[in-house]
Image 1 (cartoon, rainbow, N blue to C red):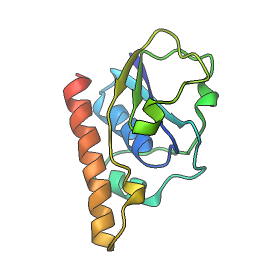
Image 2: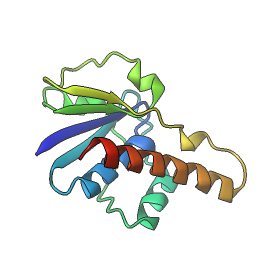
Image 3: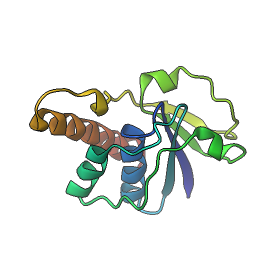
Length: 136
């Protein structure tokens, strides 16, 4: 089983969704965790709603710092926001492959409820497509 760490700045939306998707779609081949360089301290409710709408088990996600994983080894590090991709990780995650999946931040969406829901749906679909293509 390959260990995956999904990194984002706030660990409230995209990385949370990617973690849940990898765990659901990985069929036991992958176990994913997520973290942020500057965790928001909460999980965005729309992220949870989007995952639930698609029948993805969310367990008990929480926004957390990548420091929690210091000293742990991961096979794969995935950054889902451009800012996190450019940050220097302060901890070593062992020998790992690194992927960057640039995904627009749905938490920054503005407009009607339908427009905000659409932004979360778009992020979900982008992540799902990448997982299905790149994590066989």
